[in-house]
Structures are given as structure tokens and as C-alpha cells.
Length: 137
Image (cartoon, rainbow, N blue to C red):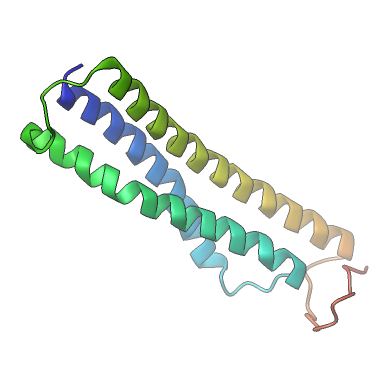
């Protein structure tokens, strides 16, 4: 397979991946000061960490694929064997689907938080430091 065609396909996958991760990071940035029950804060932290790691993990491959489109000589050859194509596409698709799933988890966690607030009788106003408190109506 031609290296530039492969780089183009990989770049599309990386851009889709980064689009979903950027949506998660933007949402988290807006929510960073929102009052949330302390037990739910951990969910946001984990999802944010996942998003940041996937975003950082996508940076170098994204830049390399973009540079390969401009100058194919950056790679060792102008063509890639089937094993290299399959490996590259698999890696790319894994990142892309991971990004979409992280975004989906973020959407689901928003729903969980809304349901928890409904069960509690509205948005939580008092965030005491009691560890054994649960959402009470």
C-alpha cells in the first residue's frame, strides 16, 4: 500500500479520535467548578485522565501522519507491506473507538449524575465532608 494513502487514512482516524477527545476535554473544562457529590468527582477525574492520555497518545502519530502526507521520505519506504498496514490501522482504530467510548462514558456519567440529583430531590447544595453521607432526599 502506498505510504501516503495509508497516512491519509490514519490521519482521518486520528482526527476523529481527537475530535471526540476534545469534546470530552471541553465538557470537563466547563464542569470543573460545578458542585458535584464527592463520590461522583472520582468518575470525572478518571474520565478526564483517560481523555488526556488518549489525546497525548494521539499527538505524535497525528503529526507523523500529517508530515508523511507532505513528505513521504520521512518514512523508510514509499510503500508499506500488509502486516504494517494491518498493524497501523488496528492501532488507529483502537484509539478512535477508545475516544468514542470515552465520550460515550462521559455522556452516560452525566445521565447518572442527573438521576442521582433527581433521587436526592434536586441539585446537591451542601457538600459536607462526611464520608458516609449518601444522597438523601
